[in-house]
Amino acid sequence: MGVNWQKTCVALIPCLNEAGAIGAVVAAVKSFVPHVLVVDDGSTDGTGDVARAAGATVLHHPQALGKGAALRTGWDAALQRGFEWALCLDGDGQHAGTDVPKFLARAERGDVALVVGERMHAPNTMPVVRRITNRFMSWQLSRLAGVRLTDTQCGFRLLHLPSLARLQVKSDCFEIESEVLMQFARARFGIAFVPIQVIYAAERSKIRPVRDTWRWWNWLRKQNSLHCN
Image (cartoon, rainbow, N blue to C red; front, top):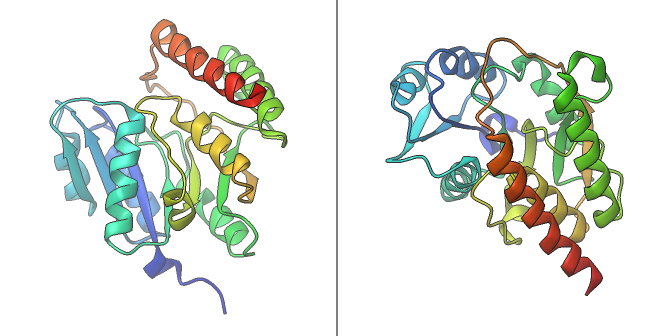
């Protein structure tokens, strides 16, 4: 008997000022996962109202705390509501709802606790800076984790919440993606990757290159220290 995704899975969308895209994102994912939880991370453009009108349950941070903080708020809420899986995706329209069945089908095989979207099968469709950065970060994390991680920065993921609850994920910002992978790998929880569409339109990245790169490097330095010890 397969997993009843209608009851056990919630789609989790952290977002900041995505009023122009979030309605369509919610509608697309609801075709596959009826329960949608949006964490509005201090938006000032009515993102939460649009998401609610599209059928999502909305949690609101009074001020922007970061993507990691928004995800952690969502994970806690999902566990409290009795969900076993959280399908995480971005609210800017970069992730295609039609890719959702790939995640569910891979997880249903029962041997993994984390399924990650993989864009590097079509690297030429990614902006060159993102492609180079992703390859470098994936190489660094694969080296530390001791397993091959082909796309470490993709936010389109399906996580097993009871497994996640056994870890101590603490990041507040964009390094959350790297931290989750590292902790799942170190705990020897199964990780799998599924190819997804690469969609880049007119959305503006919320990543601040200098600040967030510096934060990621500090996080990586701490991981290297743990690895050496």
